[in-house]
Amino acid sequence: MMTVFNKGNPKIQLNGLANASDEDEQEGYSFIFAGAVMAIRNPGGHEIELSDDPDVCLEHLAFGTFLLRRLERSGFKTV
Image (cartoon, rainbow, N blue to C red; front, side, top):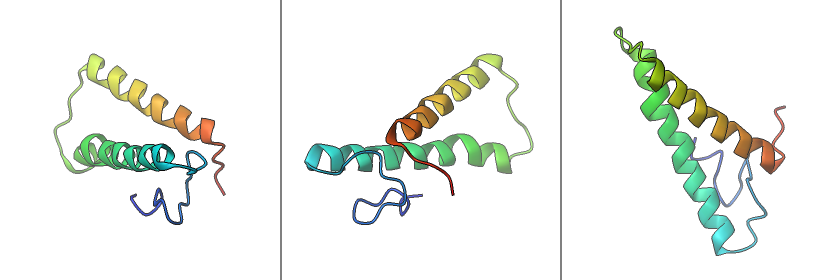
């Protein structure tokens, strides 16, 4: 995950990486995306008992939507 957002040669570039602020944003989102995989996806993929709490589900969906919209704003296209 971190390689995909690497500031030196990113596969996904969220902005122009023109200044320190752009680089910080790129790095920050790399941590957010990696954290989402580690904290939300991985436990659900490895644990037998899952929470059925609808509020938690909606929060995860909203967070995922936030991340996907940020990708869309960057102009990222799948290949």
